[in-house]
Image (cartoon, rainbow, N blue to C red; front, side, top):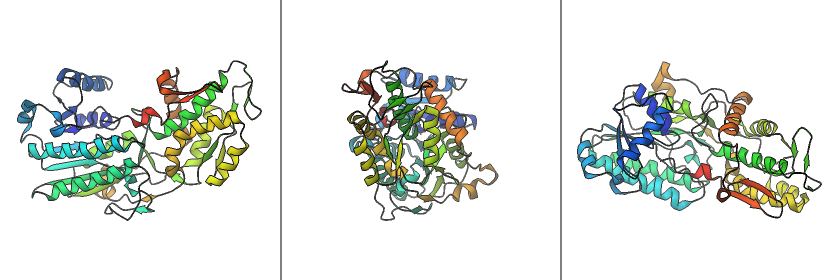
Length: 406
C-alpha cells in the first residue's frame, strides 16, 4: 500500500514500483472512488501508460482508518504485506497543518496497518530531523537537537511513532528513509516546486514586475539595463555553507531498490556526498534570472545595515521578499553532515551515487520552472501586490511549496 501516490515523491515512486513488478494499492484522496482512480490514471498517463491492475482506494490519511470504506478495508485484510508511507505535509509555517498530516495522519495510517495485519512499515522521513545538530548517523535519533520548524519536528515525532508501532507486536518491522532536500529530477523536470524554486521564483517575480513598469520612474538604487538585466539591492542572509540536496528521482530509485532488502528495523539516509555550495547556487540562479546587485550578508547585523541603505521602495520589496527568504535561512546558514552507509552496504552494486549538482543542473531546473510554472502571472489571490510600488511578488510563504504532498 502506497500513500502519497499523487504527491511529489509518490509520483516518482509509483511508476518505479510498477516497473519492478510490485502489486500496489494506492491510497488516494478524492470525492469518490472514480475521482481517486482518475488522479492515479492521470499520473501514469503522463508516464506513457495507464495500468488497470493497480488498485486505487479512495481515502484520506487525516481521517480515522484513513477514511476508507468498510468494503475496501475488508477486501484488504491480510493482503497487504507492506505500507510505504510517503504522504506528508511540507508546510514550514503551519503547526496545525504539519501536525494534522505528519502526526495525526501517520497515526491513522499506522492504525490502518494494524487493522489490515501489515507486518512491515516503510516510512519516509527527512535527514533534517537533525535540526541544529552538526552530524546525524543512521543510528541516531534524539541528539538534544532543536528543530528549525514544525515540519522537522513532526517528522522526528513520526519516526518515534513508527518505531513504537513495530515494538508493539512481535513480527512487525520498520524501515525509515531519510532523504535530504529533494529538488527536481536529473533531467531538470520536476513534480514539485520546493524551497529552491520558491526562493528563485521570488527573485524572478521581483525582476519581472520591475521590467513591466512601462517606463514608470524607479528609485536611484534600481536600474534596468537595455539587455533587461535588473539591478536591485535586496539583501540575502546566507553563509558560505553547503546545502544537502538530491534529485527526487534519484531518491525514489534508491528507495525502491532498498525494498528488496530484508526488513531489519533500519534507517537509510539518501543524501549527497558532495553537497551544493549555496552561494554558488545563488550566483548561478541570479545570473540566469538576469538579476544583479543582491547583497549576500554573513550576519543579520550586516543585512540590517544593507536594508537601512535601501530606498523606501526597495525596503518594501525586501519585507515581502523576506516572507519567503526567512523560511530558508536555517538551510542557508548551517552545514549539517550526514552518514550514508546503510544504502551503500545493503544495495551493493545496485547503489548509485547521486549525480553532481552543478551549474548545468541548476540551470536545467530553472529553465524547466520558467517554462512550465513561472510563465503567466499567478492569480491575484496568490500574489503580494504593493500598491505604493506597483510591484508584484510571488505568493507569501511560497504557497506552492506548502501544499500537502498527500
